[in-house]
Length: 235
Image: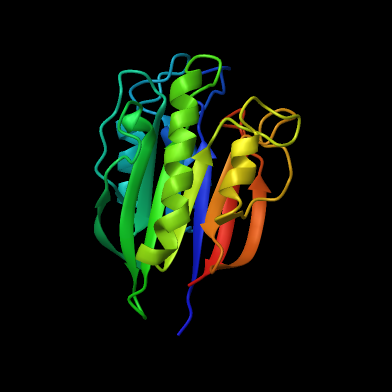
């Protein structure tokens, strides 16, 4: 029996590039409005610079509405990724440790789940890759590590999703945009070729090629300078 699962990925810009006049309750309502199975967040953690948002308050808001958070270690700066899931739809199996171990462990939040009906394995990561201008060597290594993971993932899991802010774009190309093309050898970029940050498409949802993508949308929001991404897929 097939099931349709959904994932919403959003960079929340807790760095506070602008004063959004936002609250955790408002952000939570936006994230949960379509009741996604998985919520993958980036640039969340500690306290935002301008409006004082606290990541623990947003986590509490999501948990009060039926979402469970994957255990995760934050950095001191709000550049972390976080992953949540609806336990009424999928069963949590275990965390996946950060794959790129040299640094940025706080930017890699992953777990393995089982579908309720057919017990299929779904591995999901929320990722926030660093900027090439600040960490060129590490950024390339991190890309290569996840491309290698993608090349072998379908042998281990029924479905794999790598979602988040990769800070790389084929639209108005960035320094490592060719890494997106390399990733596409093993996974499908479910998100359409539309900008997600200004005139670049920095945010992506990569899904294993055997997974049927049912729908995709880019969501405008008043909480971040990034558009959110939503994908429905069949398992």
